[in-house]
Amino acid sequence: MLIKIIFNYIIGYIRISVEGYYIERFINICRNNKITIWNLKRDKNVKLELNIGIRDLKKVAKIAKQTKCKLKITRKRGLPFVFNKYKKRKLFFVFLIVLISILAIASNFIWNIEIIEENEKMENIYQDVVESGLEIGKIKTKINTKDIINKTRLKRNDIAWMGIEIKGTNAIVRLVKSTAKPDIVNEEDYCNIVSDKQGIITKINAQNGTIAVKVGDTVNVGTTLINGWMEGKYTGIRYVHAKGEIQAKVWHTKSKKIPYNATERQETGNIENKYKIKINNFEINLSKRLSKFQIYDTIVLDNKFKMFSDFYLPISLEKITNKEIKEEQKNYSVEEAKNLGVEELQKELDNEIENKEKIVNKIINVYEKEDGIEVYVTYEVLEDIGTNEKIVFWFTN
Image (tube, rainbow, N blue to C red; front, side):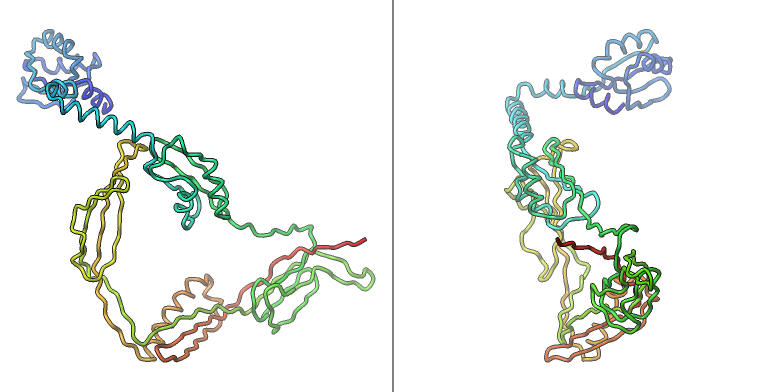
């Protein structure tokens, strides 16, 4: 229905008044003949106003005569009537021709770059793509998508897949971030169990292999915990796939410097909005450049104009929002600075450690300096630290 209405606007439509005692019959016959009618307005029981396409006027007039209704044209709308109205005004057609020419020329360039990251966000990916040759304002025929993809992947080692699609004046860049795959040791492979963290052994449960450490030992990353071999009195040494669980007390430490004198920033709730029109690299300020605030944070939102879903124009409206900030000088005592630092660091550690029940101890160290204090917070946590490491055999002739 909507498409038909838009089409009728392009070819022209009229608003008519229909008066008579058989208006319901008139409407039914129009609809049975697949004549598009819209914006119906009833005036009393014998009068109706509605819109029809200009090409359906003869059919509607015939139906009105058939149903003994009086028909009158009240308004004319659509492009044919607009052209007819301004046909003597040369400037209008000159403007129309110039506008069409500008749009035709603009359609040959890229005016928007859309980044779609399928799994994880990648830092600075937009800048890397632009530096590789995909730029705003570049002619579409000069864009070599394969070359841009190769250059971008050479800059980074975190791209598993990348594709570029040009639609209208929009360049759509699709990316899949690569994820590090852990080394998997098959059940059939001989392997040791080694430590993947530094800690103090608290529990050992060996199911296969020979234990290489004891409870209370301090181990580093890479220390062998269970050897992938067993020795029998009659069989000698035989290699196996080591299995077992090793628990250790490991340390998670965070540090922060808290000055005795600090500036605290708070939003007052007052904001101001400024606007500017950007035509490619040319800017037109619609507001005063200077802010009425002395201290403020700025958020910039760029709204690009587009005619269709992928037909962007080199014009955008930039909204600049300034949020007023109030700065206040804070003076802390040693105890206040310590409490502030400990609170912030504990929040960070609590967010890192999933299993809070495994935290066995919290250690706080404070070191006083001339201009502030340094706070160290350490959590001692019971964790499984064993990981499989395949045994590699070297043979020499």
